[in-house]
Length: 135
Image 1 (tube, rainbow, N blue to C red):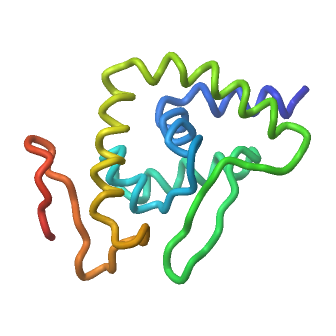
Image 2: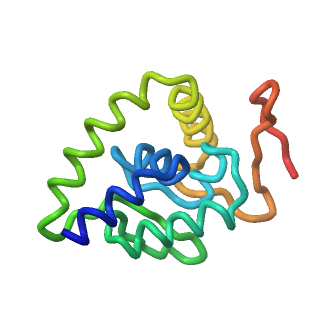
Image 3: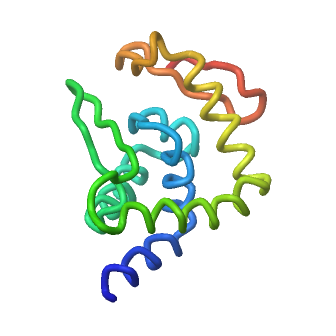
């Protein structure tokens, strides 16, 4: 019972729900999530750490980058996916959900062969025009 309550508590946070929604279909790097949600890296990492502690996501290190995906193990994996499908079907239709999808598509389009960009060539998305801005 406590495990289900922990999952529901994690889904109650808007940032965590947005992260889980983006991770539904694929494994993503933290930098891709940062650009999609337009939030600082430390905030994204903190929420991912919480989701990992509850058992909703799994992490994989690839050099300096951390990649996250929805958990595939455990008795709750199927329940979590079904619950996310129901909740996310409503979030998909919101302005924020559509904006997250658009930001992620743009971010994935600039990645080279599906890999993250190297730190000297970090790319951030300009809020107004969605133009690429090199920092």
